[in-house]
Length: 477
Image 1 (cartoon, rainbow, N blue to C red):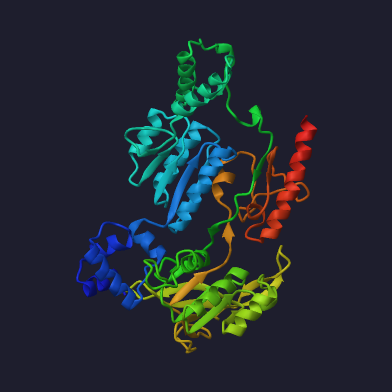
Image 2: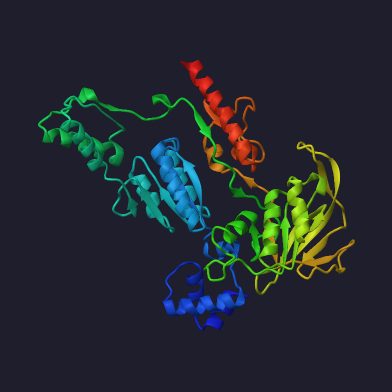
């Protein structure tokens, strides 16, 4: 099923269907026709396929000047909440008020696979405007005002004026002003003008000795930083066929079902109607995805895991419940390619290779080793039949593949912060006793250190880091 088929059944052009699927303008009458056809056929485009076709992947880049600033953190929280309600995730970039980093991230997001950018800049320059003018995707300027760029900003002048006026009405006459550089038009210049204009209304001459500029960084009071940015980036295997329609991450699948209410057919983003589903992975999230797929009506759901059941990271109760509900386990198997229909671009099988256990790796679990000549294909009928390739080969059909092989921390913090080291999985390296990273004064905990784990472990790491930060600051006093 393609958008051409949907267009023909709805009596509209493929371009109209594409606009409908990507939130473009479509008349209400045509929307209704397309919606009815989608509900009748159960058609649901894969976000991976949509990304390849339209460049959209429900990811928005957010560039901020200093994440440890409370107002900035609150704005990021609000952005995250609204984006999540619309089915989007954010990719956060912290610039530490460095102009070169702002320009670097603007250029990175201009070429990377984000659908748009929210830029909270500090010092707007001609270089910033040149980069932003070259954008071919939406960009919104936050907390600054530029006529040529869509902007959402505070009235910094009025806020400073009113704050000063409140003090003046209380008969305060010797008022100090602490601000940032005047090169920052909003927070620096506009606030300072608001302050001095309020004084002028009361015939008070500003005293330059009481007007101070600061950077509001670690040198001006912040003595330590805690990184708890989590690990929300889904991993894929990097095998052929992962861009086919019907392939998604467990994060996406569960988000679409729950947050986006994909289980309800009247919603605009229903999940694909699957007959047979392969869930790749052996953790708790894999069990959630497999059991959810059964609830969504799949006739066959398989857990494909490269180690044995004894090595599965999922809780025993989760495995037990999955088996009880009818999930089929294919342990000691590993995908090598996802197969698809050349005409529709949809998944119609998954080629796998059988594994055997070798010596334990660094995790303590025995390492899986491929068995030569054991390749077979997983397809949607549930049948095993020989196919003409060397070795013992079998076919078991699937029409949906859900990748649940873990998540990684956001790479931007570690790749842009000198002295902050990470392991091969992209997790920050810390002293397990203190939670201090390889950079002095910077601590970390939770999934950013361990990879995807539990809330309890993250809470424990946060408490341990808080105690260490307290000792660190006291020792510097």
